[in-house]
Amino acid sequence: MGQKRKLTNIKKTCTRLRCIRQTRHIKYLLIMKILETNKSSIIYKEDNGIVAIVPNTAYFKLKILENKNERIRYDNPIEGIEVLETFNGMIFNITLNGQTITTRPNMADAVVKSFDNTDELYAIFDKYNNNKYNIKLLKGILSKYGERIKTIEQGFVIDDIFLVDRTGVCWLWDAKHKIRDQKHRTNLGSGAVCIVVNKTQRLQLQSSDGLVTIDEMGYIILSKIEFLMNPNLDDNVFMHQMPAKVKKILELNKLK
Image (cartoon, rainbow, N blue to C red; front, side, top):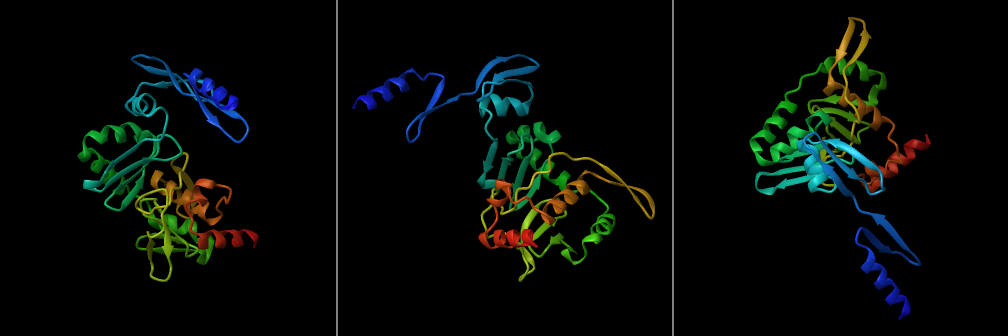
């Protein structure tokens, strides 16, 4: 009885703290607090007590002031729209009618502004899908992996397990039926596998035809393929999306 009263008193005094009761002790977590907003900046204290300053842009207004630094999500089921921020801030997975793209950080403001105008969201999606890259050049670079990578109309199949499509989105691959496998639940409603490329850039490579440039979309595709060729099995976000059968195959491949 005394223990219950003591816990109750502690909870009453926790105005800026969350009290989480665990087995034999109580753990305190600081709640994020907005310290100041002005025309150019938002100043806030993070959950760990560190003071952060971010620009007062459309993205950070939504992320910090409204979402309390949680991942941003926007759903419009009637139009088949799902937008979910990845665990890497400012990068979004946008799904329209079952098709998914992963945006880049410099698109964050445009993405959140489009929540009020779905035509703008479709424009972002269409522009991304119309990005051009040298498919012949990518095939040449990936040829070093031999039969591990197959180039098909939809994109690149890796080890008959994954597909990285021509917009840089990763899917599980159904080798038997030669289609992407959307039956298994991943972090995205469309069934796409969320893999985040932390940075995008243009690459210049020396080839038999001289110096050639790989654009940002090509870089994203190459980066995801390189990851899938030797995935980090300690990456919980990635492994959580894998079916048990695929996990087993990846673990066995790691032992070879």
